[in-house]
Image (cartoon, rainbow, N blue to C red; front, side, top):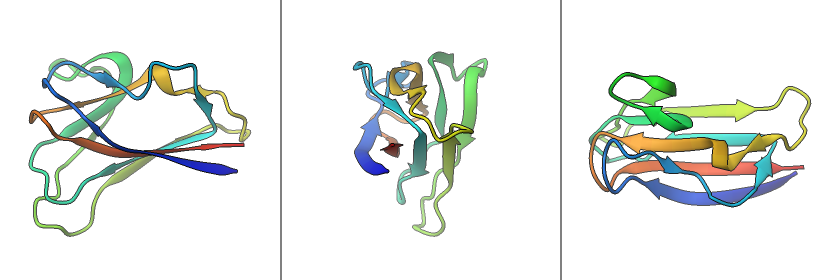
Length: 107
């Protein structure tokens, strides 16, 4: 299994979800983590999600302003196959310029 850190995926304009990639990349696992020191909630969901109505939102992660424990969220396939398409998932945020740390794994 190969680890592929995307690094920090930032949202320039809150309410405009940022896809993880536009390429046809697949993975067996995707991990999202709050970045210590940021101040707003972040959202994980489908590429067309709406954080205001929560339509298409899979998970809301709370900020870690003090640098303590940072929330994380895993998506993974049941059989370990690379069938999660990164372009199907996006990140949104309440604060412009904030985002999540994202890593994915491939078989």
